[in-house]
Structure formats: structure tokens, C-alpha cells
Image 1 (tube, rainbow over the protein chains, first blue to last red):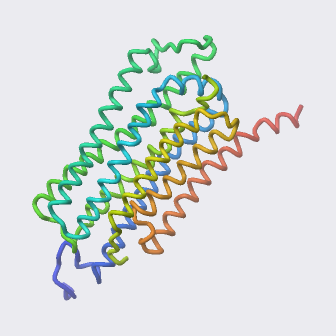
Image 2 (image 1 turned 90 degrees about the vertical axis):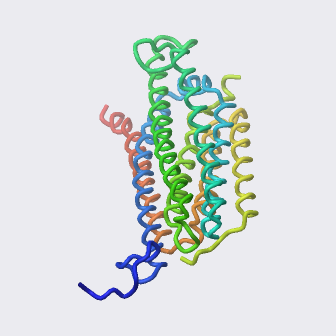
Amino acid sequence: MADRAHAETPALRVQFDTAEQQKDASTLGMWIFLITEIMFFGGLFLVYTVYRSIYPGVFAHASSSLNEVIGAINTAVLLCSSFTMVLAVRAAQLGQRKAIVIFLILTLVLGFVFLGVKAYEWNEKFVEHHVPGPTFHFEGLPAGDQGPAQLFFSLYFAMTGLHAFHMVIGAGILMVLIWQAKKGRYSADYMTPVDLGGLYWHFVDIIWIYLFPLLYLIDRHLLK
Amino acid sequence: MTNHVDSVKTYTIIWIILLIGTAVTTVVAHVDLGPFSVVVALAIAACKTLLVALFFMHIRHSSRLTKLVVAGGLLWLGILLLLTMADFVSRGWLRGLRN
């Protein structure tokens, strides 16, 4: 076995020369993962763009049936959770162990608020028969436009659903981070998991920053 | 990457700008801007993304390699969207030539 150049710690594994090199490698790896996620969502945004360009009128109609006030409030909730997340990362950088836990819990709570509001909105769609399927019916549109309206709601459920799925995973990550932070695993020297968890959480936030105007706010002025 | 710590004040300012951006995008959707509605909505979203990425995701303190990877990823996203849309938009043109 080769001589170890240094004693192994979580902040400095044997295969790295310096803690800084290890941190850079972790950050880079996380970003490459996030790029694959961007391409994953990118495909859905592409499908959305194609169909919206074919059926701009129907998409505007269908979009206007979504509650923009609830959508905007939920966007604000998510932005607040990103703010508490970045404060958790900052607390970790400074080695403030109690503050890490508090800010992570706040982030988790806001994440659940977002998911709760989302569940309420989805439930409304079921009540209104706006869920694609045999019982789908969108009031005020001719029979020929029911298909394109279903397309809009298919995209709505696929995109917000995939986003919510990412939120659930993010909540799981937060719970592990809270548990580990409570045990005092993170310090100013080693806080990479908090940092990378933060990157993931902000990424999910960015996806919603696009979903909100693209799904909720299509040409609202046309239908006043 | 040096372990650069931003101030709470910086984060608070960014957070407030993001909330204002959300309010603006909601209000602007009710103004008739014709085809520019979607352009304005996407421009606001892009500004918000930039703020989140630069400040909350610490891109401005990240290594050059990380910045390059992020830019490269966005380039591929651009290829995905632009080339597909170029194909989709121009399909009818050929049919017109044949007839």
C-alpha cells in the first residue's frame, strides 16, 4: 500500500492533495449532475414550446384557468426557502452548528408548504375535470379544441409533477442534512453536503422560476 | 475555491429582488405587449436565474472549471432548443417549394 501523504478526514480523503481540491471536485461533480437535470427538464420545455407555438390561443385559455395568485404565492414560498437554504449554507461556512439546523428546518417547512399548496391546486384540477383523460372537459372551448387543451394540462401535470418529485427528493436530502447537522457532523472545515444540498435546492427553485410564467401567465391580457 | 462567505445583507437584497421580480412578472402578464409578453416573461425569469446562480449557488466564487462546465451545459441546452425549433419552424417551407 502506498504511503498516505496525510491522515484521512471527511474534509480530506486520501485521494486528494488538499481540502480545496476535494471541495472543487465535489462542486464540479454536483454541477455536472445538475447539467444533466437541466437537459432532462429541457426536453419538456422543448415539447411545451412546440405545442404552444401550434396552439397559442388554446394554451392561453387553458393557462388562464390556473390560479395565478396561488401560483405567485407559491413562487414566493419557494424563493423564501432558497433564502433560508443559502443562510443554512452560510451558517455551515461559519461553523454555527445550531443555526445550520434551524435554517435547514425552516427550508424543509417552506418546502412542505409549497408541496401542500401544489396538492391543493392539483385537487382543484380533478374537481374541475381538467385532468387529461376520458372525463376531461374544458368549458368555453369548442370540441375541436378539447384535444389541444388536454395537451396543455398534460404538460402542466408532467412539468409540475416532475418538479414536485424533485421537491420530495430535496425534502429527503434536507432531512438527512438536518439529522447529520444535529449530530454536529458539519463544521467550517467540512460542510460539503450542506453546500451541495443547497445547489440542488436552488436548482429546483430555478426550474419553478420558469414554470410559473410559462404555465400560469400565458397572455393573460387576452382574456380580460 | 476559497471559502468565501457572503454577508446576510447581500443575500437579503438578492432575496427581495427575486420577490419583486415575481410580482413584476405576474403584473406584466396582464399588460398587452403582443408577441413580447413571452419575451418579457422569459427575460425576467433569466434575470432571476442569474441572481440565484451567481449569489445563492456561489457561481461568482466558483472555480473557472465549474463556470466553464455550467456555460457548456447551457450551450447544449441552447443547441437542443434552437436546432429543434429551427427544424420545426422551417418544415413547411420545403413543402411550399415542391408544389
